[in-house]
Image 1 (cartoon, rainbow, N blue to C red):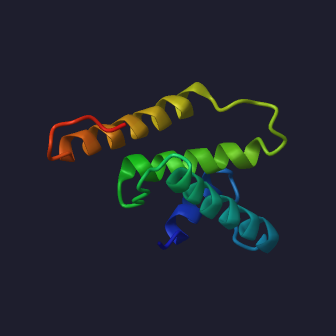
Image 2 (cartoon, one colour):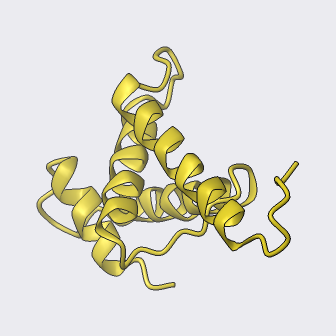
Length: 105
């Protein structure tokens, strides 16, 4: 998964106009990859950055995590709402793809 464009978006949203801040760029890249892994493993989401909805959510979530590195603020409601919608969309798709009509537990 190429995250170059995602990193440019994150730097733009954090108002970082140059790529000369190598330590910060590395930190942001690690945070972005960790966030994608968290959403995949913990939340069970398929992170497809070609989807504008998922791309935007991941960028916003990484910016929030970077800006809130001291963990004094809980996840904002708009991020919680979007994450819950992605999870519901995933579960709905699983139920629709279930051949025998039974529910997924």
